[in-house]
Length: 155
Image (cartoon, rainbow, N blue to C red; front, side, top):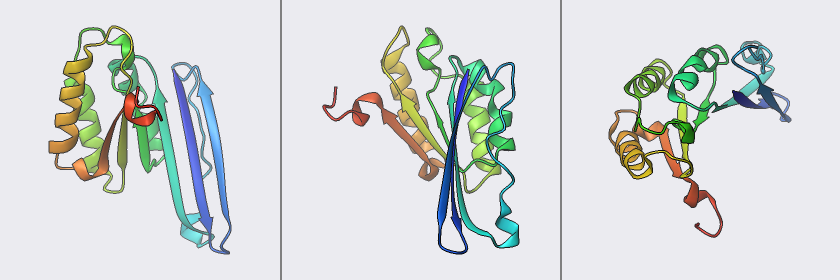
């Protein structure tokens, strides 16, 4: 699996800093992208931490969720099931884990990026994700993007 992390900090003196990290082989090595944030001592007045989980299946994505909690992430970006999930439309365990995470962290936002490639049940997954991200109690903190909406030509 691959995890990417981005951290942006606004310092009390008005300067900003950021850092991008990419981690490979995350099933065998646990990444540590962020140093402890000095928010409590007044040095940093605002932080944004983004985790991008790029592992193939719902189960493998769930195996990485402990990192989202450990990293104190502000925004999680994920592709649900990737194209490797050929039959399962939307994993109930996957949905439940993200709902629990959203319930636990009132400042967390979830960005779902859906690519329409491979052998996935595309239309069914699209409908399930659209329904979930617009009807859940935390839907104001959930964003669903189709690949086509992220491309300039709309294809």
